[in-house]
Image 1: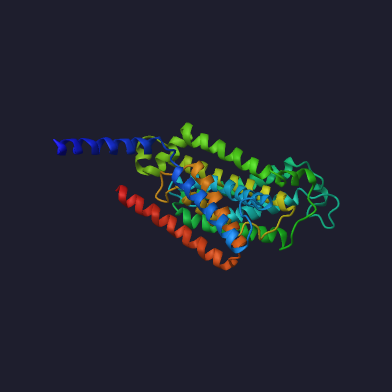
Image 2: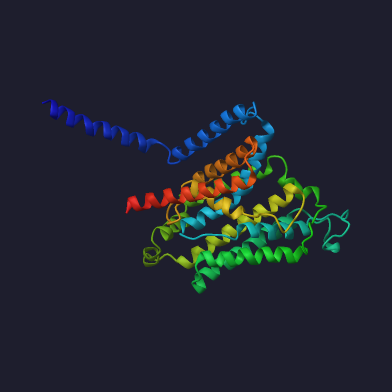
Length: 342
């Protein structure tokens, strides 16, 4: 009788645990990791510098602004990763779009405007131009991948090199400054954060509740099955890469407005941060898995790590080493999960 009772109790407790896990939000685990990292740096702050890490308003504002720029890119990169693709060009696209937007946002006070006849333009002109250049880069990526069969890694690597070179040629290595107040306003105060949150909400809804999202997950889950089921895979891949390029363009415009300048060196390694944010947030490089909410948390984790290490005095080169270890660890965990599922 006791054996029967014990055997009867085990399934009920297992059922309870599984139902409890089922009720928890999918991003609970990564959110707990984020909170733990924040608390670790808080404790380290008191131990190393005898001051709080989390209760410093200036530091929190800086973290949020950094997260906003990377987060805008990461929203597009997440959608690319869901389709089993990769986008290495986003950092260079930021530089190209930033200098294009800045060149059209100059005022008549500039000592040497790039386009003397196009100074004091309405803010909408440089914004649309910058985002438009990003969209064009995304279209080129998508067409190269779908029409020529070039792997996404190679196609976007080529765009990464070309876009950076175009930015340098466009500016001849010189910074573009004296930008209008109406343009720089979109990069000041909380505007970058507002823009990021709006972008995140739009694409969270798009991926979760629209045909576009359904098809993107289907393509990443099994591209052959998606084709057989009648999905125009090439069309949606071009759309995904176009969106990623457009969001990189938007990030470049916001960054130029934030620093009141356009420079060809902008966006260095931002593509790696965006990929890291997506992977840390639960996106699988094997495709078919990824959420905007997870990417948002992943971007915050990266911001906390970067600011936290700077706060406690870790060398910048060491920070890059640790960031690389984090990326490799996140990918390793993802690969382990996929092997376990198979």
